[in-house]
Length: 219
Image 1: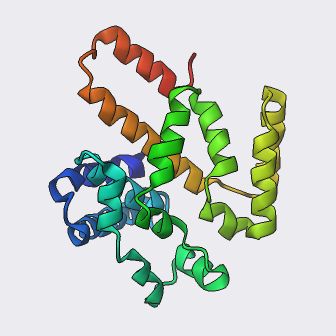
Image 2 (image 1 turned 90 degrees about the horizontal axis):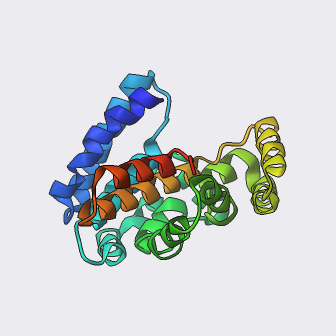
Image 3 (image 1 turned 120 degrees about the vertical axis):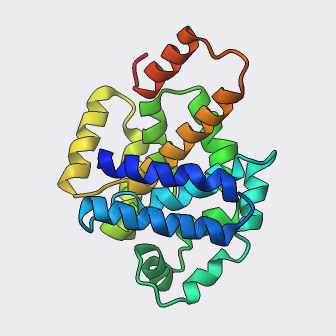
C-alpha cells in the first residue's frame, strides 16, 4: 500500500504542469493507475485518490481552486454514458448517484469550504471520523449498500469517546466496511494544508515539527 502510494504520488506531482488541461490530467491519471496496478499486482489501492488529488493539485495552482476545478470538469458527467464498469458508474446506473464525478463538477466545494476549515480546528482523528459521517463515500455505498452506509454514518456521528470509537472500529471490521472515499478526502485535506503551509512566511523547524505531529495525530 505504501509503495503504491509513493509510486502514484510521483505522477500526481505532475498535475501543476497541466492544471488547465483536463484531458492531459486524465492521461497522467491513467499512467498513475497503470503503475499502481503494476506495483500491487492488480489491486486497486488508490484509483479514487489519484483522480481526486490530481484535480485538487490542479486547482491549487489558481486563486479560486473550486471554481477552476468546476470549469475543468464541466463535462465530466458524460462519463456515465460510457461502457465503463467502475464502482462509480455502477452506482450511478443503480441509484443515480454521481459520486466523485458529481463532487468534481461542483469543484469539490465542500472540500474547500467545509472539510478543510473543519480540519483547521480539529485533530486528524476527529476530522476523519467526522468525514465518515458527512462525506458521501461511494466506497461505503458500494460495499455495504445504502442501508448499511446510512447506519455507518450515524454510528460515526455517535462515536465521540475513545471507547465508542473502538467499538465503531470493531463494527466496521465486522461488517467488512472500508471508508475509502473518506480516506481519500482526508488526503486531499492534507494536500491543501501542505500547499497553503508552503506559502506561509513562517516555515521554521518548530513549525514543521508541530505540523508533522498534527498529521500523525500527536497532540
